Amino acid sequence: MFETLQDRLGSILNGLTGRGALSEADVSAALREVRRALLEADVALEVVRAFTEAVREKAVGAEILKSIKPGQMVVKIVHDELVAMLGSEGVAIDLNAPAPVVVMMVGLQGSGKTTTTGKIANRLATRDKKKVLMASLDTRRPAAQEQLRQLGVQTGIDTLPVVAGQSPTDIAARAVQAAKLGGHDVVILDTAGRTHIDEPLMMEMAEIKRKSNPHEILLVADALTGQDAVNLARNFDERVGITGLVLTRMDGDGRGGAALSMRAVTGKPIKLIGTGEKMGELEEFHPRRVADRILGMGDIVSLVEKAAENIDAEKAAAMAAKMAKGKFDLDDLADQLRQMQKMGGMGGIMGLMPGMSGMKDKMAAAGLDDGLFKRQLAIISSMTRAERANPDILKHSRKKRIASGSGTDAADINKLLKMHRQMADMMKAMGGKKGGGLMKQMMG
Ligand code: GDP
Ligand code: MG
Picture: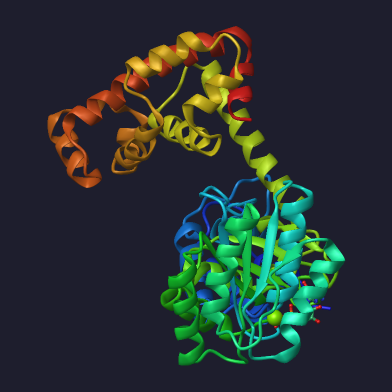
């Protein structure tokens, strides 16, 4: 099997002292290994580059918390960034359109379009109680239409009767018409692929799209696609315009780098994955699982979770100690803002805590809402260390400098300072009570 990224990072980063911040050199050494792991997982080169740059920016200067090792810190940053790049989970097929909703399947020959057509139809019929019609537009291979018809028989899903001599666009138009007459909720168009991307294929797809006005266009691709994944996804997206991706053969032993490549170049969600040849073998996409697999780390999940726990616990403890002393500076406020962002903003946090409506109102009065977090963090990061530790020194000229540095104005800064004072007062009151129990709760 693959040597894990963790093994490699371990040997590089164990030499680090575990104190202070990650340096440029530490991060570069680690990123060389990350790069190798991604290339081995078949992530396309241009995506590897973009990814490692994004990680570099995040990682250099990141504080190494004393409860975790520097290697874990880098691994956590890499992992988080990978999950973020892979996108959100559970983006369902969108059926929010007048019936019959047209779903068009596109992709290369052998990628799994016909199989996935059957799987999706089967899922929509059994789980969502939809009436589905499947139509094969593959006139190129004689057996293709028969293949879909058999899947229909096997799953009990309607298929469009085959009429000899029709073009793919004629069949598409006939399928939509038949679905209207038949009272179908959804019609899935299973198109023909080719062994590689060429002009006639793209023209045919564009023409079918024009004739059938699909609500979803799903690019079906083999998870084992290597460097071609970028080209494939980019071409289909630019020429036909896809709404989502389906990755097949995730049951194979590839590491699924194509997921990252295709998601990165199109920005379109990976909606489903195929995990076998059988009709039931269709699953939701879980970015976390795929990230682990791309990195080649079976045990990384627990490691990363532990690191995250440690980070939060460490921060909460530090905060509690400060509060007990009645200290709450702008660095603390920035930490709070970041934590709040992570937890889904003010509404999310306050909604979780009983008896917090008073605080919520106060914060609203001070101008604190979710949209402001970003700007406030920008203001704080434009301050010097001394200013953050002691906001009282912020007079007119300093404010002017900070405003231009953060793209805000003096009023924004005053608002932030006012909020900080109010929060500091509240923190003091809470800290006085019971060792920061509430703060710990707030910081999850
Ligand atoms: P199409 O040419 O794009 O329509 O591809 P097909 O649907 O005909 O699939 C080609 C082959 O891949 C068939 O043998 C399928 O059974 C197989 N296949 C499709 N999806 C999967 C999958 O998720 N896992 C595995 N192991 N095989 C799959
Ligand atoms: Mg087919």
